[in-house]
Image 1 (cartoon, rainbow, N blue to C red):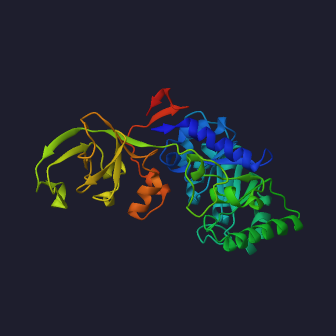
Image 2 (cartoon, rainbow, N blue to C red):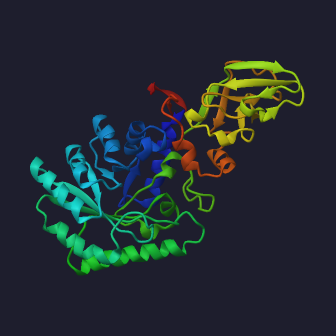
Image 3 (cartoon, rainbow, N blue to C red):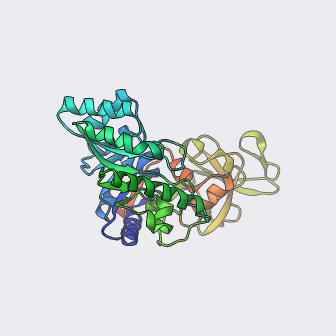
Length: 370
């Protein structure tokens, strides 16, 4: 279940935090972090975001085909031969090489349009981007191309979600230095942006012309070390219904490998959801779910399509009862801690065969299932 009212609440909180003069680029990559990119995009834009960001052009195409016409930034790099995708689908493309720059110019010329680009600067993430000392000369080259609109300049924090902000501050200084060098060289770029979710919460000096919130749009904090300067509402809960209930005697093995054997008589429920749906196998014999106002443990190994839960402590539990695997009562952070990962992965992992039921302001929304 995805609460679009929570998405709206979170984006409105971001908008209030950064102020009306700072743009909000809502990050909806990975199908809106598993929540559904199109639905999230509509909710985020209605709540105050002005544009969107995705990881690959194909994600932008989905949004365009859904009728979304706002600017969409592709944050990942593509091969020069893929430059046509950004032009065809009207996307803003991240650039960090002359080859891609020239390919975009060529494709834009063929289509009689401009290629709007954002130059990525690597200030310490070590992933993609130009080195700071190479930015001025690169921008000069880009400015000479007739069919390229150099619209954005940005970087990305590596440690803004940590309590110690020393490295993040160093990255911010590096980006500021690049901005100053461009200004001194007489090279203007309209849209400068750097702040991710953690920086939105704690580093207002990094807001520049726009911010790029991701995980906080979905109501989750980027780590346990950040200050909760925006009150968020988690948007996703993973729920199912008990498919089968049986009472078994002591010594009964449950699931593959007999990793759980009942110590006495037990009531065991089977849930129609497993690791193929994004409920990680490492939760076997470790996680708990919420049933009828009580916690109940997962017993035995999580299977591809099913998992089992001990309902002995849940009086009256029966087939058809609703079960929450994470959400309001079992936080995504608890699931993440159990398997040694982060809340991002927990929500992104929910598979495409799991129906998304959309609600708005805690009520089912018309046309709500996908």
